[in-house]
Length: 95
Image (tube, rainbow, N blue to C red):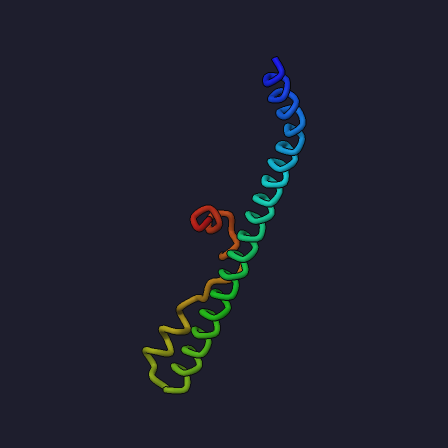
């Protein structure tokens, strides 16, 4: 009986510690998930900004070259807006 009492009391003493640790682990996991999502959104925004700058530069270059078909092509090509990148459809397909 003594050994059983020791095991029981040890388990009872450790139960709150284990529950607290499990709660903290869940909290850290949730925080990590939120941080990863923020970084992913920031990365997509930065990528979008770089691509837009590159497209703007390409359009300026095409206009400066005075090549009619190239200027017509760049004028007819819409650049994606920030709203498109954050649309629910886009977020569902990328996340």
